[in-house]
Amino acid sequence: MTLTVTDNDGATDSDQATVTVNAVGGGGGSFTTLFDDFESGWGNWNDGGSDCARYSGSRSYGGSYSIRIRDNSGTASSMTTDAFDASGVSSIDVEFFFYSYSMENGEDFWLQYSSNGGSTWTTVASWARGTHFNNNTFYTATVSINTGNSSNAKVRFRCDASANADHIYIDDVTIRASAGARLAGNSLVELGSIPGSDALAGIDEIAVPQNVTLGQNYPNPFNPRTSIPYEISTDTHVTLNIYDLSGRLVRSLVDEYLAPGKYSVNWNGVDNKGQSVESGVYIYHLTTNEHSITRTMTLLK
Image 1 (cartoon, rainbow, N blue to C red):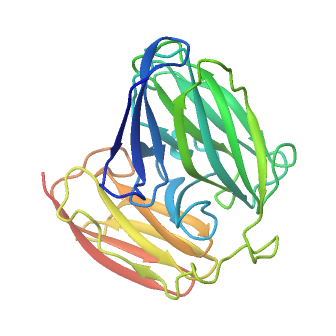
Image 2 (image 1 turned 180 degrees about the vertical axis):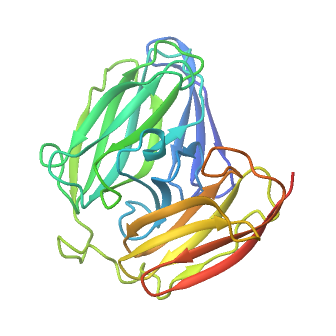
């Protein structure tokens, strides 16, 4: 067996790591293991849209950050990997940690696999509130997936709830080749609630921001995508909209009830009609029940 480890940021606590392992998975080929803890960004994963966001707070299992998915808006309620090569192995294991907040009884989320780069998806596992998990509790799960020896594979988590207040937080995701001597099968293990919290609130006071803030987008100027960071200090309804200099609404990025925490949302220079906008200066405006903050950013094409 040949083992090659690459730490993408040169540190031991990297949020993204790749490991190439030869002669595993029963196929005699190789597979690059993917690991992401989201501490420094999205890593190997992609933001599905308005119902997916990178979150910082006590609902993250490891470190500060995780990915929050909500509601049931299809791709917008999903987090999806980049395409990866699984042609050298017959099966992979997906291991991850998750936390549920305010999911109603029977609401669920799915793990899906695509062997054709995301053109079609197959649900390989699903977990429902009240049957498989309860709110305000951490779990770890492992799912084995038959790859079909695809060279253009993708994996995604998709929420299938009913409202913006129904949240699943995904963290510390590892995708690896299944060991050749075993077929892992699926597992789900309860890990307990947030230490020192009650079963309903679950808020780590150290992690809760003290103020509502709207950060400068990065990069700025940008093309074609930028990230907008913001922090919420109390449970509140939040909107984050983009306007042109005439005050016309260009894009609604956030419109939901949020728990305290640090968030970021991406904008790809597309308006609410799915059309690319022109180069120029744009206004982005955050509102909560008690605050209103405005900044500007520049799109250069």
